[in-house]
Structures are given as structure tokens and as C-alpha cells.
Image 1 (cartoon, rainbow, N blue to C red):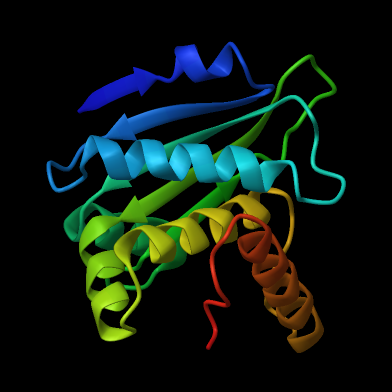
Image 2 (image 1 turned 90 degrees about the vertical axis):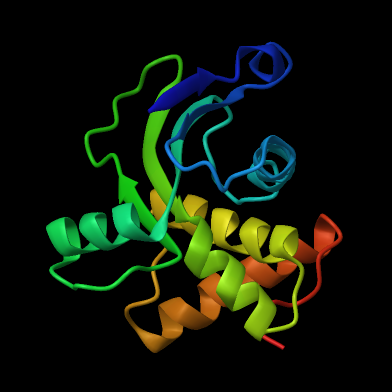
Length: 164
């Protein structure tokens, strides 16, 4: 398992991202594109802490299936999982939690929806980040609000409505 702390970009950002890559399918340029887009998106999220840190696991379908089974008791791979840190403290940098992204599912979904891999990846990264910030979609009203926010953020960073 390869872990990289993205320290160079962190020098210029109050939003720190820890990268863990354990699947060879992930290309460096796609990972760094997502990091750039998440930093841009973070600034667009209402009430998001200015100084925060997250961890992102870039993995494969096998690991996503295991994580989903272990934590959600569902035996299938998925595109994104979020693990919010519910024990946040008022410290200098708030660790919001972890996001896991499954390359295979994301790639298949992007092709099926005729979207670019990077645009779909960015949408799912933002979706995961919103979950770390306590946004949810369990109720219809929550889902509508979360979708509107995703669409708004994506629009501001140059990506079209993912729900069309």
C-alpha cells in the first residue's frame, strides 16, 4: 500500500488531503486532478471549516466490496464510501474523515453515462466530501438539497450537471 502526503500543495492550502493508493489502475494525473478540484470545491461549500484535512483511499472494486461489506453489510462494490469523523475537536486542523473511491465502478459508470472519467470522479469526490461535512441523502428533502449543492459547486468549477 502506497501512502503519500500531499505536502507541497498543502503549503498553499488550508485544506489538506492525505492520499492512500492501493490499486495500480489509478493514474497520478487523475489523482492530482481530483485533489485540485476538491480544493476548489472546498471553498464553495457553505460553513465548511477553513482549516481541514481529509484522507482519500484510491482503491479497486475488490477493496470497495470488502469495505462496503464490513461497514454497510452489503456484498457489492461501489463507487464512493465516506467515513466521517464524528469526534471532531476544535483544533487548528480538523480531520473531517476518509473517502474511499473505487476505480473500476467509477470507470464503468462514467462510460455507461457517457461522461469523462475525471468529471465523474470529481462529482463523486465532492459527493464524498459533502458526506464528511454531514450532508446526507436519506430523506428526499436532504437529497434534493445535497444534489442542488453538488450541481452548484460543479458548475462553479466548470463541470456540468451530473444528474442530466
